[in-house]
Length: 217
Image 1 (tube, rainbow, N blue to C red):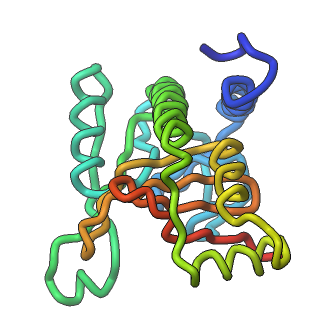
Image 2: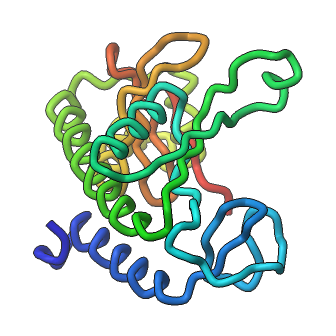
């Protein structure tokens, strides 16, 4: 899959994985955070007491919502990759003795690159699946007057601008599309389209563009 095309998402992922391969050779390990890094300090706790990472060190891989994280951990174990899923989330939930909503996944360093490759390939396939779904239904997109007004202002499109056209362009250019996420309280299924400079959020059922978050700067 990687390195075949010279343009688009596949080439970008190929470049990312090449960088990962280069970094793997000089990684350090923070025992406090179980995190592998090529930096002089741990990016999570800021600690300097780093050592060379060893094959059997469990290293942070990814954080996922509870159900998705537990399912992914089971898939990895089924593929012979040792995986530890640690509850994670809001301190407010901990204080109220409520179950934490996320899972942090850790795998041994010797399996980390193989697992990262697997996740990148899965993410690329999911992105293209959701992009196709959204583009096939692009004419059904809708916007509330409030959301449209905000997009016109933030994107500097002017009074004669087309907010829906802007959103369709952002979706077409999105580098990652994370779809079908159920919100904790509303139970709505949302699709998050991460484009350069903005994230477009679409209701998977109604196809309403519920928000566009712009990067600051």
